Image 1 (cartoon, rainbow, N blue to C red):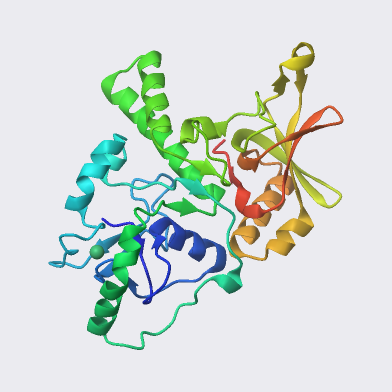
Image 2: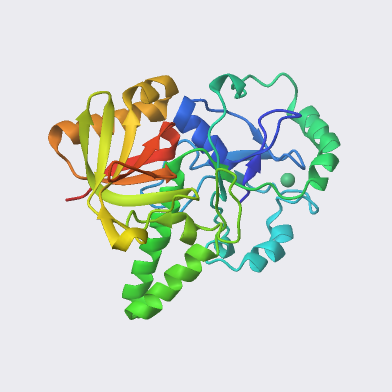
Length: 318
Ligand SMILES: [Zn+2]
């Protein structure tokens, strides 16, 4: 299993998650992938379709039968083993990579389009190897994502795995909580460049009960959707508690302007808009994930979304 690939010589290497996001946002797919270090041809896995709700298989690249990376290639699994063990995560040990950085997406114009190979595979491989030494010196490349949906899938997968283990091993609540805490803390996650000692999945995900006005967080909650003038309003079923000023309780809501959705003009925005409008007209409860820093306004905690990639919603199975 490898994570990195390029689609042509000299291109900036991207992780499989990033190719997956480019497809989901812009519908751009590529037919040829190569290892950016040794030029080996790679096969895409789980990049153009989601393998169920959880990431039992995250987006990755496989090698063709009987073909392997060069011995000294950083994408070689043997070479990677030591680094993986050092991470000591439950998932990394199985070779599953998760996004460790969340950034906003580039403009569609800046994304390399799919093209036809203009040279033989052997020549491409040779050219990639000639370019590889500078790349190797740069060190490992962190998997990153542009979509809140990818982070939500990872977080839910870890929780799901915790519940499965709890059932199987008959863990009590403390053992379960300890496993979840350790699992989520062991996977780094930097939101929109805000790196600090708490940059991991455990601290990044939070409920609206204790909103943080200083740092980016992924707020997750169940709620309902309303349409008010030019906005969709997602109201949290959980109330925020503000610790200053004598423990006041305040409603929490996520807002997104319809013009924002239009301006984003990508496939993901259309999906979000369909979900919001459908949930609103049919009064369907939803689970919401939203990345941002809320503000207090007229007695309400408001998180306004300026880019649809920072939002993910789905219907509740109720
Ligand atoms: Zn390689």
